[in-house]
Image (cartoon, rainbow, N blue to C red; front, side, top):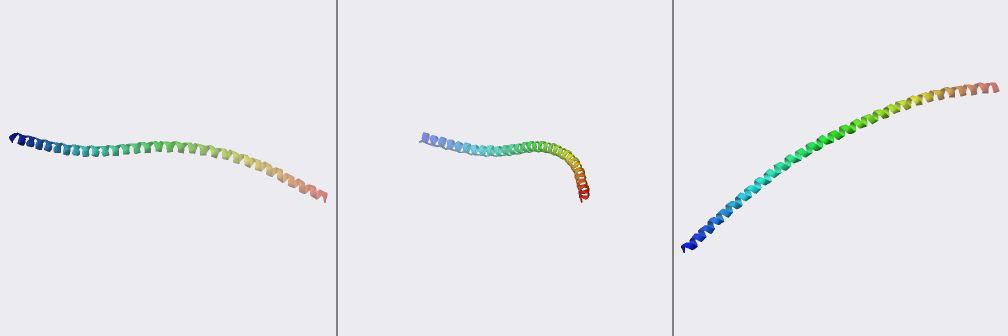
Length: 110
C-alpha cells in the first residue's frame, strides 16, 4: 500500500506542478499580450507621425507648385491684358476715325 500512496502523492505533486506551470504560462501570455499591445500602439504612433510628416511635405510641395503656376498664370494674364488694352486703344482710335470720316462724308453728301 505504501507504494500506491507514494505514486498517488507523486501524481498529486505532479498535478500541482502542472497547475502551477499552467498559471505561469497564463501569466506570461497576459504579459506578452500587454507588451504586444504597447508595441503596436507605439508603432501606430510612429507610422502616423511619419505619414503626417510625409503628407506635410507633399502638401508643401504641391502648394509651392500651385503658387508658381498661379504666378505664371498671373504674369500671362497681365501680358494678355496689356495686349488687349493696346488692341482696344488701336481699335478705338480707328473706330473714332471711321465715325468721324463717315460723319464728315455724310455731311458733304447732304
